[in-house]
Image 1: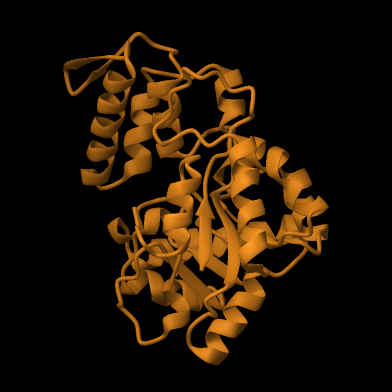
Image 2: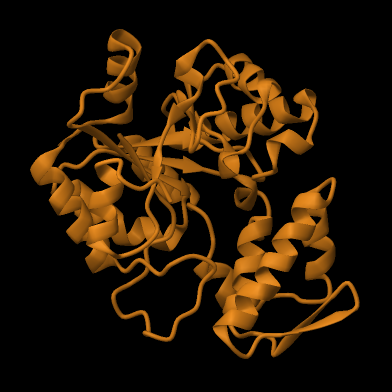
Length: 295
């Protein structure tokens, strides 16, 4: 079993905080991992993949820990805990922010709709108020749906941000791993990096040529700043196609990770499943780790 996390929030996060997903505070993350460590053998992703390749399926009590999108603030919270407790983890990181002081397109929409910067948004000529959590989620889902239907989600996000820029302090709050943090991971014997594309596109929306550029350039930058090989790749948003698998292989990755594998390849190493964890509920966490629920 491979666990997939995204954002982890500080314990001091106010109770009325809104977010596109559930708010998982650091104390609840630690409680989940401490339980996992009691009943599972937590190994590095390298060890997990090697076992998967050799045996064909992982042991029932073998677990690996991963993070997608890799927010700098989340890394600041979790890395001391992981290091102190000798818990391996892999951070599947994007790299666009290393060249541009901007957020990933979907992260921008999350911050825009839930950080209470604007009282309302105008989307395709319609007014979307942002006064309640329900209204914020409705506006966010509308933007995500338009981005998904658009030929280029990032271009749509960039155009939209011209009318609704975010203040620097909000951008900093959602920024990805810094060059210094990438270097820290590279120097660690506990932590490792994985590829996650340069700008987090929907891979099935773009050509195999552009997929290869996104995937290869991301790998190149991560290896430069960490000074270590980056061998594993996670499909962005769990979305991929046969071209994606071919591009990941061509870029030199040894494995690929999905959320719900589509069984597009005979090579199971490039469609390894993961279990996504979003909320603080320990009961739901247990149900997911035992395979009772999957959402």
